[in-house]
Amino acid sequence: MAGNSFGTLFKLTTFGESHGEAIGGIIDGCPAGLELDLNLVQRELERRKPGQSAIVTQRKEPDMVKFLSGIFEGKTTGTPIGFVIENANQKSGDYSHIKDVYRPSHADYTYDQKYGNRDYRGGGRSSARETACRVAAGAVAKQLLHGMTFTAYTAAVGEISLNKKPGELNFGEIENNPVRCPDSETAGKMEAYIKEIRSQGDTVGGVVECIIGNVPAGLGEPVFDKLHARLGQAMLSINAVKGFEYGSGFSGSAMKGSQHNDLFNEDGSTRTNFSGGVQGGISNGMEITFRVAFKPVATLMQKQETINSEGEKIEMQGKGRHDPCVVPRAVAIVEAMAALVMADFYLLNKTSKI
Image 1 (cartoon, rainbow, N blue to C red):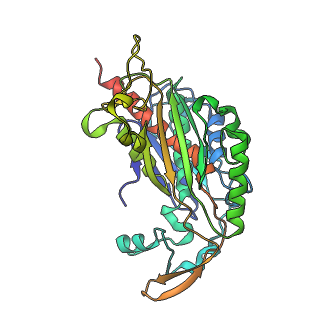
Image 2: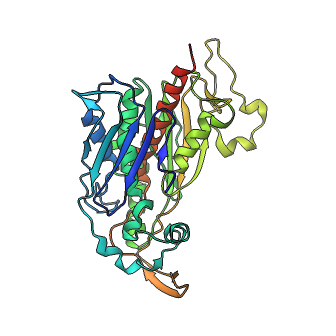
Image 3: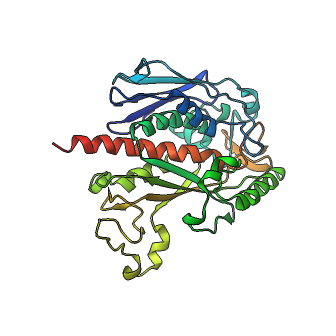
């Protein structure tokens, strides 16, 4: 199976399945001498882990990360950083009913077509459980990037959206509610809606917005390796993501050039930021802003028609522990993937200068 690594200089390779013994990863290319706060890594995993509130999956995983290599006396050695996260709360029997069944909008059918064999327990390798490895690696990347900041939050759940400008948002509120929305009133509405959807045995999608601050100008490569292209690849690699836009995004297509151009200030900053902090594929020193759209979770606690591996039409219903909405937990994943991209370009930029 190819496609398990991400990055050029700062590279993450992950392994493991949802209901295997453990998941884990190898971070290659992290410079030596970086003093790591392992408690910070664990705190980031706490933001993504299951069972953290009443509106997420109730799978109880402590998600304790154990580093195996690449760190000595609290500092990186420059060698590969290996880590594992044990799967402690497996209930593989919850999936026995889908052993030969293709769940609608899951990877069951496509994995069978590609590999002729699949781990049906929780989706195996296709499970979002793999993203815990990304969060652990992203927490290391954040520490490499010093003053660069990563602020992601829930901007929409279903049709409930934040209708406030960035200056009106309270980022200190993000971790004070289970939805991770920077507005307490909107957060309350989102939480109530997710609970209502869950009571119906249904699911709902949403949008995560992210702001990367204190970004120096000059990060990114021209043509095929543009900064926004790599951010798009990173976000679209996250389970359940259906869309990515940065800066003005799709709304910019309805604007005139005279409205959309970001005019310069004397110090090189711009009066507006429709570019989203990226021009010509390279950071311009402004905040990098982007949005990520997540689909509704495919596993429903409702009966649906589907087919089995013999092509026979059957009826099935989801069982086990599943998120009614992935967005609150995805906030940490979006930040982590953004940090992996920025760490890679940070190191690439250092090597491109003499």
